[in-house]
Image 1 (cartoon, rainbow, N blue to C red):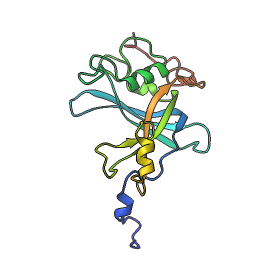
Image 2: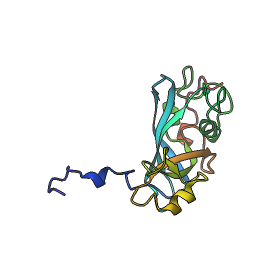
Image 3: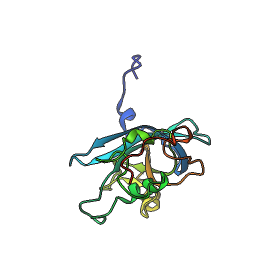
Image 4: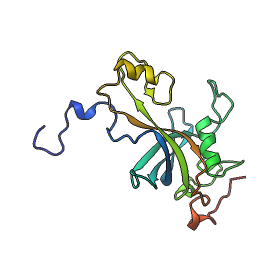
Length: 184
């Protein structure tokens, strides 16, 4: 490695960041919630979740794609994405337009909300595999036993959400009176 602190080499760019958290449930506080649009111009929620407990307290997990609306095709056509549904349940949303969706409350109302999330690890660019391999998949143990994951750094891959024992409402205890127009 060069003396320049900004220089990188090929090993720095392989797989994930190398800082993946162990696969388990985490309690996180939502920060920097935002809405973006995918290549089909459909809105999705993204945010940073600050870990509240344990050896990784103060660390972060990132939700990079929580699609809003109903899936247009595939096995969930006409239904809300299952991960999105688990998230809406975890924030106490029962019906109506969710935050971030057109006609819903501003997504910023989610900031400060505490939820539990299952983190898994994802391995990309695995030799002999067309798709990333995730720790929750049936094929994971077989691929791991084959040695194909050796040298590949895992990435965090957020799974399903659940209601946290620490949930105090949208935005947390200080924000319970947040404007929720559009929630139905």
